[in-house]
Length: 385
Image (cartoon, rainbow, N blue to C red; front, side, top):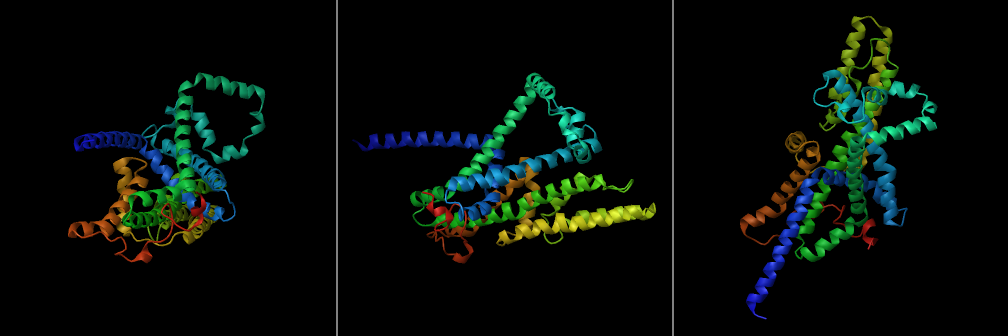
């Protein structure tokens, strides 16, 4: 076989590889929000999965428990909190940026019922659990084809997110070892992957998950508090206050106090101005619940899992802020991911590339490259092969 024939064969295979790579990139681009959120679910559930693996020998069972017993209920609870927020925003600004009634088959009465905790608590569910009601529901579903298509698409995206997180939990260690074995003879990729994984864990589990949990708790707790509020003393825009508290938790040190302290002062001033003693007691309850349930408990639960940060706080804050503006809703996940890739490329790889010397992956402090994630050896994931 001549050299030209070998070169033509290799060129043909490189062309096939380039075409396949382009197809994969197109799929990732088309579903980038779903994939990024799936990666977030993986990092959010990985500490729980690693604890379960010490008690459950089968990795598939441990991953399934972590996903379907923890992640799925949390997603449903977060969706309900967003429904309450959407209803409140719609009531404040009218049919502006988002109107849930634009979804086929969804009307104002249904939104008002589902987003009102007081109405849900007082609802007699036995009225709806009968054959006639179920028959009416099925008839309505048969007529609302657009709604079924919308819900079906949402369920497909949800399935992809959970499936991606499940297989990363179960097979992430195997995938990391495969990449290192066949594409990383010098150890550069392993060092780079460990550094990236460490900061992903800090960003996704330590920061964003804390914000989501805090925001969800805030929306539901404040909405329930308003059920017991005295006349004229309710929390203003309770769901929005809860959501903003979750967003403010991304700010170091002061965090959500920037939200609930001014709201408590406003409520106290309003109660004093109208001489309402009962309203002052409600303000005290609001402040106490905010500090204990919304602020302190999520922080105490999540902080032991966060092993410190190596990224500059300012750059992370800019990533959180600019990401949604640039990419949309999933930008709050995607922009920090890109930031971590860039920071560790500049820190580990770029100096040797600029100097023209051999890249030495452990030229930096090896203690910084902590154990964790897909690039793991000797932990609970090592026995999954």
